Length: 171
Image (tube, rainbow, N blue to C red; front, side, top):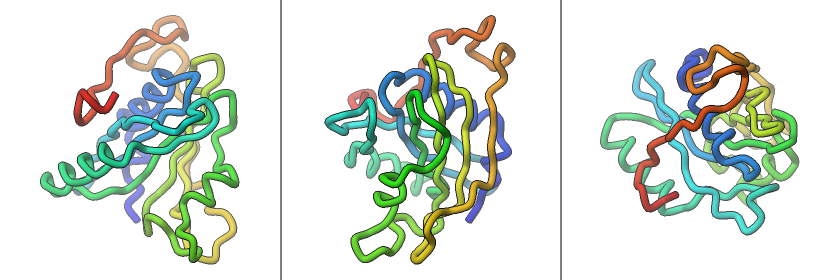
């Protein structure tokens, strides 16, 4: 497990901005890393009820993972947001992070959850990987976006910021 991205304010801000951009729906994506350099990749949420659930669009996910692999990057985290919710893993999040036999769907991969209230990211939490037999992973990092000093914000309000998806057709 490589959690060094959790100390990278630029990556955490990118995740928070995606959560704000997709509000009131859940935003989602992945974090890939090569050495100590990480980047967040926003992906489409194709769940039928995106305001309360997320499902990463599978073709977009595969394209992003293949492109990352070609760059020598590895998957280190999956992120999503909880509109008007808390920065914690829900029962559904935990269930979806496991295969039917209880084994991890993505072994060694961290989970990131962003709390978004009133279209502003309020808190981001990074959790240890979901492992077989564990009831709930430990939170290893909590981060609160700066209210007015973060890029893309003025006076605590969101300024429109465009994230570049891996493929324009994915959004």
